[in-house]
Image 1 (cartoon, rainbow, N blue to C red):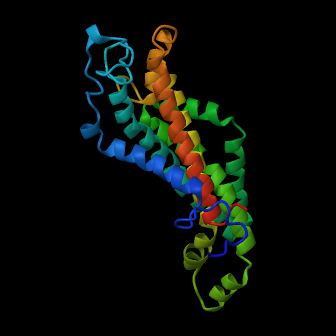
Image 2 (tube, rainbow, N blue to C red):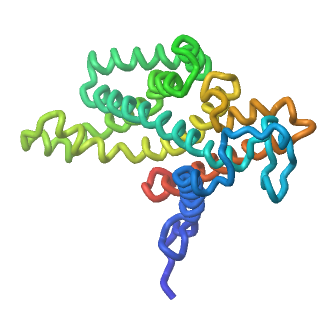
Image 3 (cartoon, rainbow, N blue to C red):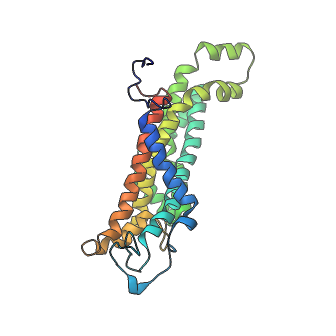
Length: 281
């Protein structure tokens, strides 16, 4: 029998990865595959209406029932994975890129550049996040593009703070000093030496942030500010079914469970990734 190193209790005995990462990754992979092959997997069109079949409970014909327009809920959930995964990806990607660049520049150069960028950051976080996002979307108009712009303008601050704090510590390290002695420019030092050493924390945070962004996207769609009907988006489905909650519980329940399951997968994957990258004890 092989010895188990201390601290490896949370790892899978099969391939040496945390169980949470494997389970979370499997859940995410399932949703990604459903989204990619929705046209093949979904039994019905997500937008085709069949009013005589409206509000049917789960059955063999409609495994998760139908909504108030007779649309198959299972098909709408499967196609909805495309939109919600897109919200999670693009809603995190742009803040991730902007925030890490700003944090890297501010932490490395310091001085006036750092002061100006941090004042901008402080002004941004002075406003409640949710209120500021709603305000920006209200100005730009409802829709997913407006949501991505709002998140890019507001969501970068957390990534900037994470990256800046680590760069402030590492920029005086021996390997950075050696790079300066060798005559490397600031751009190469930041991108080739500092960024790879600080990016892991931001990657783990991005996985967790994706959960919040998906929940935010569903909430805004519920309020009519995100994806617009008849789009098969989970928040839209919950909003459309709320008036039938007491008589047709399945219309709201199953989209809500889809959000919970995807959020669970992302949270577990983020926790396992934190162990792999050494950002969590």
